[in-house]
Amino acid sequence: MLENVEKVIQKAKKGKYAIPQFNINDSTSAKFILEVCEEKKAPVILGCSEGALKYMGGPTVAVNLVKGLIKDLNITIPVILHLDHGQSIASCKKAIDAGFTSVMYDGSTLPIEQNVKNTIEVVEYARKHNATVEAEVGTVGGTEDGITGGVRYASLDECIKMSKTGISMLAASLGSVHGFYHGEPKLGFTEMETYAKETNLPLVLHGGSGIPDDQIKRAIMSGEAKININTEIQNAFNQGIAKYYKEKLNLNETGYMLKNITGKYAIPFAKAIVAEKIELFGNYNKA
Image (cartoon, rainbow, N blue to C red; front, side, top):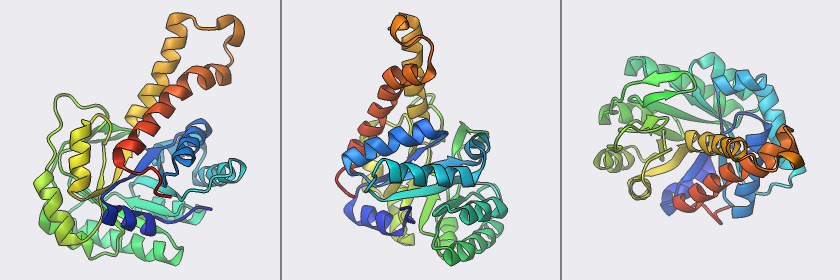
């Protein structure tokens, strides 16, 4: 059963831990993420970008896939299916119509007045379908899945204006980047604390891959209640495949059957990252 994010995100905010958003790109990633989260009894947000949805075949495919896995794998934890970086009102509505229980409307490149106006429209539509909404102010740096931007810190004024739209989560960009970091991340912890207090909203940290553990823990204590992880999982998966070919592991046993290669090498690497993040975020046994 898919849920919206409201209950789990508010519980995380009060408990000073973070709900992970692990992005899915296919049935393989959705399956191993759900398996680890069930084992850890950790609520999870499964994120799908517009690019991933196009690759998978569309939002209805993603909804049916996740619902099928929840049923067949006997998943008992709260699972939220979330559109990541919805670039238009129409794409958010399409995801909601398909059965997504949460959407992110990303109007961060627009003037704040237009971003707020569009977000309100998405929120009103989502409420009619028992879905929740995340919005973004400021700009997350780096590039991921076709989304590129330079780092621009969100302002308190922007955050307060966005907090009045009815959203359930606020992605206030404060120094994080998509993809891998080049150098040390410079996160605005003071701003996080201020914005979380002034808006009374759970904050969302995009670009969580590669941030040192001590900074992740400090961010959570500063108000970040949802942290997005994508790059590290995909990189770990690819490292497993690379190890298989570089070391010529079990070629006689598995041949070149993809399900065997990924099952024995790539998936364990990726699962380890998922488990590590759940522990780091303090999300285990919170279902």
